[in-house]
Image (cartoon, rainbow, N blue to C red; front, side, top):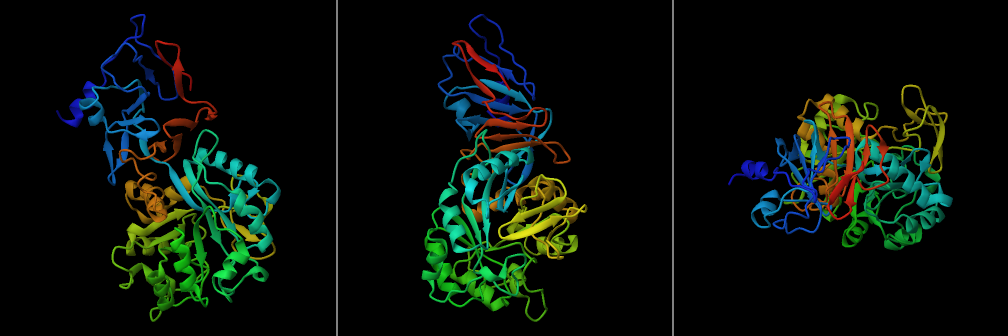
Length: 461
């Protein structure tokens, strides 16, 4: 039997204990079927079927149903053939797109929260941002800590815990450390007085941060002395290393990759300019010295401000498999025009949506959200919708080494996904198969579907 036929067969209706089809109302007109009268269904968990949709799978938008059980993507053929099972809950998606949830690996804060300075309310701040991100389709993120005094790191790092996403907010995948081991010449908005060098090697790292527990990504300037040894130490601890805020030449950048670095932090920003005789870090995109089997990833702030569309196109066309869209968002994301603080720096947001260090024209992060990054990237590069979506989903998951769990709709991966219209506007956000936000009602604090009595399920979204 073909997949299409098996899917059609699975749409058979079942009855509750009164002999009636159980129906409920939800944002996507969910039809709920009782299952206790169907002894052929061997599963004791609720099975959800999202139909009348196009799902992003294997790099293509495909007309196919999405099946969920126990917070994971389910293979319907195994369900039908091996278990003789069927859907308990069927949800009509009204021809919307379904894509994995966005993953932001560089975000400094938002909604009034700054991860690098709110030492009194670290946990509350992370939770506030995590909750706010759901409306923009972001289901996982890496809170980013910028250049700060050692006492700030020591207070903040131990209190940012890895956690799964839920109705309480997007999941925390780990911390991104950005500073203070960066170039003075390419510090950007990072305060120079807190920058450091590796004078004693690894001891400098531990004296600065005290602990690296929970750290997933680490930005470093590869021209700093002892940087290759530090990179090797970080990689041994399963920490991804990214080169950035750097004046490194191509040879220094290639040495960092040889030592284990696999990423570039916000390409083009806070690094030496491309030159035809020494392309610098940018040259890594086409370097023939990238070790075999290694994919080099590079972050891009696709907000229309940090990078000209022409530069975005050049990078993408040179190395499309490595692009990772990031927001580099700061405190003011989701807030009106005004003055705010990120790390140890004060900044102002202009009516044009630009964030500058107070009293200067130095950019200090962005106020963009992941959904807008994806849409701008699509428009600027004229790439396919699938390619734009994967730049904010599959690629960041691959960069962090978690693509088996996040960033795709492959079978057995986490059921973190979003529903989008054809213009890529977010209509609903799901985490572990649970509806956590939708355009009509906003955040959801309860499971979208739960068990009701002995006869079946009731839709309460």
